[in-house]
Amino acid sequence: MLDQSKLSPASRTLSPLPKTLHQGLLAVAVFGHLSFFTTLALFCYLTYKLVKWRIRGQANRGYNQFVLLIYNLVLADIQQSIAFMLTSRWLVEDKIEVGSQTCWAEGWFVSTGDLASGTWIFAIAVHTFFALVKGYKLPYRLFVATIFALWVFIFGMAIIGVVLHPGDFYVRAGAWCWINEKYERERLWLHYFWIFIDMFGTIIIYSIIFIVLRRRIRNANQPQLSDCELRRVQSGTTDSATTARAAKYMIIYPLIYVTCTLPLAAGRMAAMTDRKIPFAYYCLAGAFITSCGWLDVLLYACTRRILIFRADPPSMNDMGLDTFGLWDSSNKYFGTTTLIEGGMLNDRKKKPLGHSTPDGPRRVSSRSGSMDDLFGVQVPGYVHTKTTVQVSHAAMHPDGDLEIGMRNLSRDMSRDKRSAKSTEGDFASWSDGEGKGRFN
Image 1 (tube, rainbow, N blue to C red):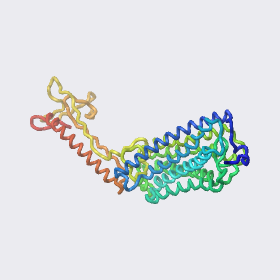
Image 2: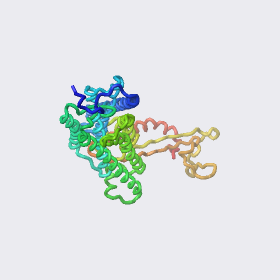
Image 3: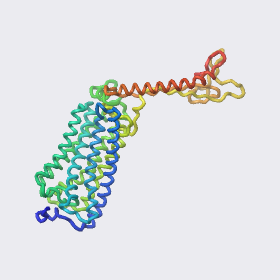
Image 4: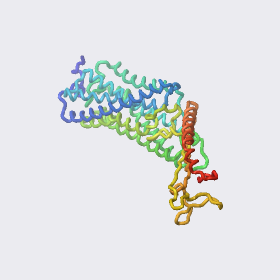
């Protein structure tokens, strides 16, 4: 049992809760529950997709690296949300009980959750930089080893503190339980030093990506491409609209993370200088940082919807600008759509306007005398075809993209052939007596 007489008054059990703290912890608990259930839902969904792709043999060679990074970020946000969701216990009991299992668990999840969330956001920033700017990605096995190493680092930072101070490491620290205030060095070097590296590193990296993408937009019309532009073509797309959309996201990602994390980090650093931080500030900062979970779900579910909510697993090499956005257009590779349109026969002449004559085909003009696009005008008795060719381009890689593309092409061509056979009778019914069709 923890001897609280050896603790400072700010680290001891607080009972009953002051009114300001009670109201503030209510907001923290609400956002904590919101983040927990939204992140848990996305985590379960991604787990289902990953297992499904593996069972179907669609991911035997591995998963898309972006998908795995988002998966780990969601797992980190779950741990962070659990920490602040536990404040509900203090509201029910009307006290923060130091030495209880809830207090220790809250301190642990605050340490691991905050650090894990920042680490994976920073990892996504680094991965995005090399994917979009350098056109490079880690080999898959090295990438998986890096994921494992990051989790060892995250939990290692928390374990070191518990091993060094097993009895009183997690106590009340302001409005909830965390590292004892007398262990300032452990707070700094096991937690906030890395939090600030993640924060400022994320800002710097996304700023560089934003500058590079804006430069690419300005240089999009140049006739010759530099080596950097060639790498960009290999890694994604050269469409200016897509690049501009992705550039906007490079502002949103660090903005949300910094907005949610900086208030609490700044408050903790100020407390290390013997400044008294009010409960209201802690609760406001806690509401911000526990919102990282549901905001990350909303942010990545929208901006990386192409990767998360697609039926088939994204390619392991799918990491370019075309992976940013709300909708996935990659299901259609290329194909032809033919529309056949016709009007009513002219009741007075019983002949279609525009039929062939000995002098050649009759021209159909508008009232103004200028030639009109027949595809935009319904001419009575006149049948024409309108063919639309849709072509999409994407980088082809040896990891199954070519096989998937040819399979989709074969399926689309078979469907077009069946549609063509079903319309042969309609074409024959419009032929004239000499076998000449009235088509333009």
